[in-house]
Image (cartoon, rainbow, N blue to C red; front, side, top):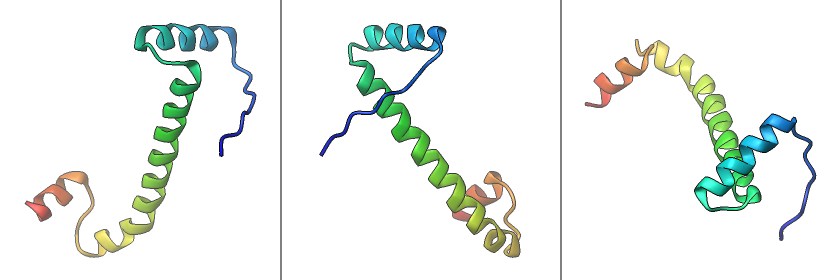
Length: 72
């Protein structure tokens, strides 16, 4: 089920959204939907990462490079 919502944007952001929509050949709704999907994904990833960091640190893994070294 889809539901419509209303979002207020500053004029310059609306113009940028319109340009992107036209350039990409997709609707404004599609641009906003994709952007929100990516935002939610990144927020969930950050939350998961912060929950798992103590476990990695206990194993001496502190950076992305440490992770790559461990899995290589």
